[in-house]
Image 1 (cartoon, helix red, strand yellow):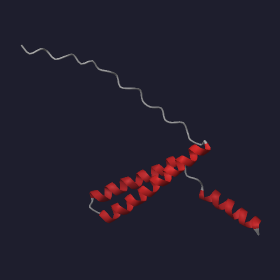
Image 2 (tube, rainbow, N blue to C red; image 1 turned 180 degrees about the horizontal axis):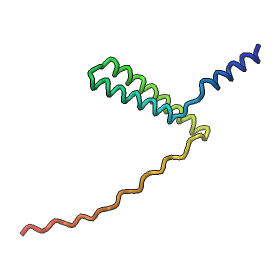
Image 3 (tube, one colour; image 1 turned 90 degrees about the vertical axis):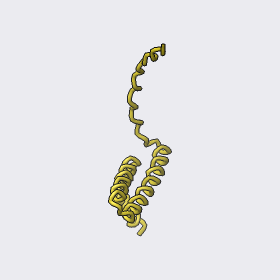
Image 4 (cartoon, rainbow, N blue to C red; image 1 turned 60 degrees about the vertical axis):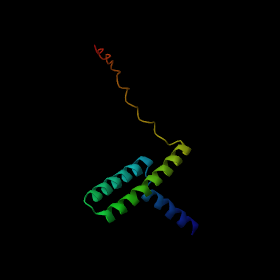
Length: 96
């Protein structure tokens, strides 16, 4: 009996899959966009529901990021763009 339960648990984990924090964050961003669109059309009930789901997914992604960093599964951070060049601005001409 315990072998059957163990197999069922392993199968459920395999079938469910594990979303990374980046995937969960992307899903949260989709719900944020849906909330903004619904609010733009003055559909505030739908906007509130989408915002609630986005907040829930943001919290879930934060927990997943913490677990990933604890396990060492964190992918390398994206390379930041180079700094903007410094533009020299000449001083203004003196007022006579």
